[in-house]
Length: 183
Image (cartoon, rainbow, N blue to C red; front, side, top):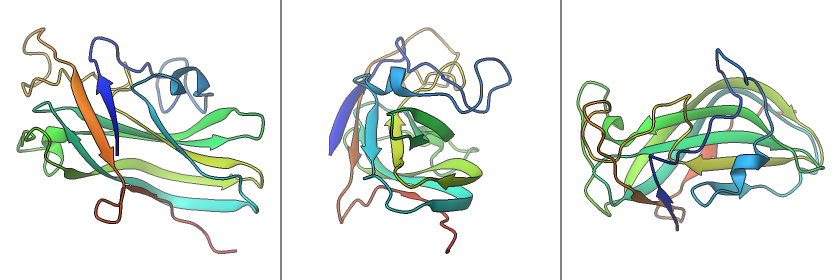
């Protein structure tokens, strides 16, 4: 397991992606990947090209000490020179993990399964490149920072820092689902 503290008053800044305003597109994420509230999972260098076409999802087993929080995910293509280029990103608000119609707050420390939709893509990860999954709890201003209070956003200015934990084991198999095209 890996824990990090998410402060809604110091969110991870948006850097590229499917934005309407600049900067947008497939930008290098290295400047934000060294933050203490960003967790990286990086593959070994690919021995052959890997083609991915279709819907991307991150299955995340996680807990929080806050009644509500967000979990964000990014898929990046890491070049041999170290550039970490954004391919796709997404978010899930914990209170809406089961439904957008009904808010369900978290129990402190209880482990939940979350599915983060990264939408669809078509990409060829080249030989020698690495695949990186980046997990955090914010990507602002693209997504409004969750105040972690359990109250709907925008009702007041109250915020709290959340300690969020990611689990990855046989019992809690956090993973990314990549639709790999067979050669």
